[in-house]
Amino acid sequence: MQTFLLFATIIIAVVLMVLAISKLKMHPFIVMLVIALAVGLFWGAVYPESGLTPTQVVNQVKSGFGSIMTSIGIVILCGTIIGTILEKTGAALTMANAILKLVGQKNSVVAMGAMGYVTGIPVFCDSGFVVLSPISRALAQQSNVSLAVMGTALSGGLYATHCLVPPTPGPIAMAGTLEADLGLTILVGLIISIPAVIVAIIYAKKVASKVNIPANSEYTLEELQVKYGKLPGTLQSFAPILLPIILIGLASITDFPSKPFGEGGIYQFIMFIGNPVVALLLGVFLSMTLIPKEEKGNTLAWVTEGVTSSAGILAITCAGSSFGAILKCLPIADSVGGLVNSGLGVLVPFVIAMILKLAMGASTVAMITTAGMMAPLMEAMGFTSPLGRVLVVLAIGAGSMVASHANDSYFWVVSQFSDMKTEEAYKCQTGMTAVMGITVVLILFVISLFL
Image (cartoon, rainbow, N blue to C red):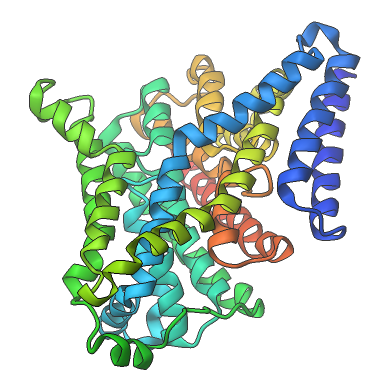
């Protein structure tokens, strides 16, 4: 009875959330806070032993809200400031021109997906999307393609390696919990994530292309050239984005279990400058070097514009985290535990991770929780070989992809930075992530048949 009531509560909450946002045109910030409070109060009233008293419900909502501000709040603020300056100075268009010259205008969507694939290895998908969104917007304008297409392709590329390839926290934590060989996990993860990116690019071209969103860059290339005489150089334009990515990636390598740089002063220094907060802050200062002398007086105004633009994104993502915090208090993991005896192989960890992801929103939390549930069952289920353990890690990662929706901060980052309405984001982001996860698990299931 409890399991039925649990999933009925979650389904009704999600449906009401979608209807309120997409049909009644209510602001997602208000909707998700109200839904979070309602679910918490309802479950606390039905099952007092859950400990969800009215006071605890409010505390959980505040805790969830604050956790996002702590984890990616500064990253979003800094990323938005960088993006604003890149657009104002024309650096984003310089980058777009460089990419188009390299791959050709017909392949700009592929380039966006590939860029996300590489960037998502060392960088959280949320911050990666924020940093790369100016390129996505500029490429959309230069290629005369809907911003929805570029945003979807970029999101898919970032999401694939974020969920499947260490050293991002989820996959590396799963590899440790399930005692999977880290090198083999990275190698197989890199290979398996390629078809996921290909599917995302195809989805972007076939489905997201039906959503027409103009790039809305503030200036055209010709206007910028008239205004500044010339655009910033290619290397200088890429630097505010490349520097944070390189520093974050270097910190990830430095923090490998083997500790390649030791654990002394060099380790501490790299971990400090490679922290996303510090790396993005350095990117902000580097972006300021792009501002021409005659425009230096506008620096404060441009930074203020970036901070203001990020407010709506932060409000929505934090409210989504509040809803997720309430759902974490529900006995979801206990309710799906019976799946382990079903004999479905890698589909079992996939389904568990998928249920947790849909309910809680956070891919990393779904990965870590599912890995903890699977760890004592690996031998009983026959996943004892090095490759078998890796397949379970990747199956959990695939489940954590399905699907990014309203309780996922990444959903709102993608939608807000790509100018998508909520219903458009469901069509582009949610649909794409569902197709990606299902594609990956089908490939893994076929591979597991030969073990």
